[in-house]
Length: 275
Image (cartoon, rainbow, N blue to C red; front, side):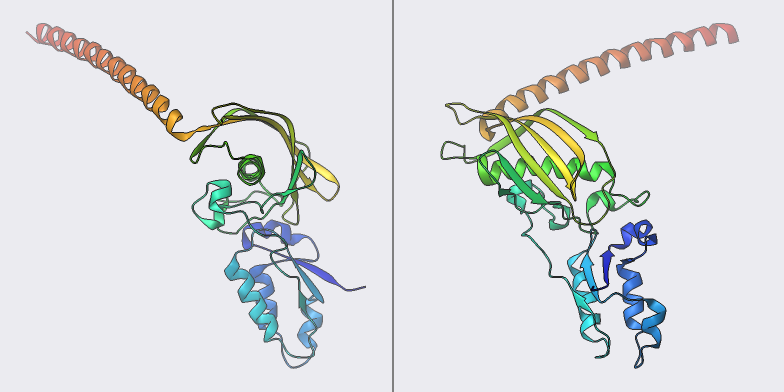
């Protein structure tokens, strides 16, 4: 049986405390120290085959692959191919920076089910502060779920009546966390529960989205959302924003007037006491 190991991003350093798991930095250090004998091989206990986990950037992958290519010939190391699936695009998940994309392009399983892989880049915006513990943070999973229903809609649910420019509006979204998701392979399963198309191109969807690792559903989301013609909704949004600003300024004006009167009264009282 081939001795396998997992490589994860440095952001998941806590997970590397598990035997058989290496961060990019740890693995790079071992590979750089490989010499002409098997002396260091036994010390570092490098696996024969490496599998990519989560939190890896494209630069990380290229760097590790280069170090393996330059390893001594007597060191047998193989590296799993990446990516196993094609990453979703800006058009799918509405993220401008590629590192903030968390899923692959969803594939249709049957009429109402769609599947995508979880793909976490080390530079993702939700990992820039810190990571607690060994698992993937809940907010990362929540964002992956959000990206999933966007991508399924863009890739599979839109039809010829869908407006050229669309606007997504979330009506409700709940997430139940059932088990930790660790930074290795995981997937998202989207199931359409209700779908309604209007004559004006509006799309209303209710769906369940599960985050799976192995055969365990680690998180479940229920989401209801609508997709509108962007131009129509923008007009309404501007009206609401204008109304919000006018109400805020009105309250601010009243508050400022009251504060001014209080200060004036206090000043006059102080002058009388001093006199």
